[in-house]
Image (tube, rainbow, N blue to C red; front, side, top):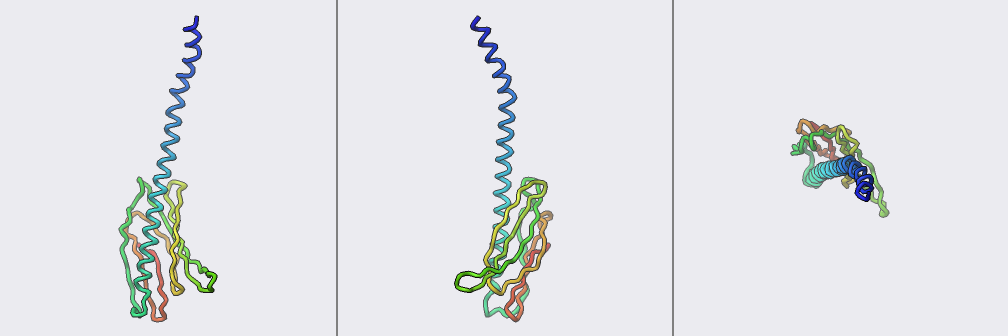
Length: 159
């Protein structure tokens, strides 16, 4: 009699576990994959920001009067099979000392997902940004920087 009652209780629990365990593992894996893709996209955004800032700082010296510089980025074309797109916006920020700086916000979107990451880069007052969009695949992104005699440094992303 007790064996029958135990089977009546345990069999539905075992059947529930057969369906519940794979669903929970699948949900957990999807979350882990999303977090991993988000981290890789953030790394790519930081790489672009760092590259743009380095080029800006290289040209922002009084000994360089005017020049044009084009730097090829060695970006990865996809993140786990998804291409990514990006753009950047430049905003003027005034700090408490009444000095102004330019802040470039770079935003990347992973195509086919809802994953979006951004990073910010501080540039000087003489920075200018040409609004341009970027597509990771094919991986032919370049940073174009042009310094003018008035010390303005025009930056943009190109392919």
